[in-house]
Length: 117
Image (cartoon, rainbow, N blue to C red):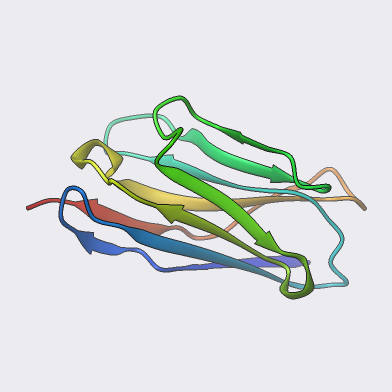
């Protein structure tokens, strides 16, 4: 079984920055993709950013130019650097991972990001 543990959420003022981390652990890890999704109150969960084995990335249009996803392969960890945060970025952010050895979508429990003055 694979476990994903997120950290780094919190309260930040508009225009501020936060860095989220997600570490994968458990059975021998062979990551295919890792990404971040978010779910705001009353809204569906949406993709924020994803990074694939090999390093290619994709971002939601709403975060392009403000958020950066990166990974540390040695530590099975993915990061989401969030800059120029807006109130509409307020949501629970979930880490997601896909492994090379199965078709399961693994999820973390989520970390709350609140952007407010």
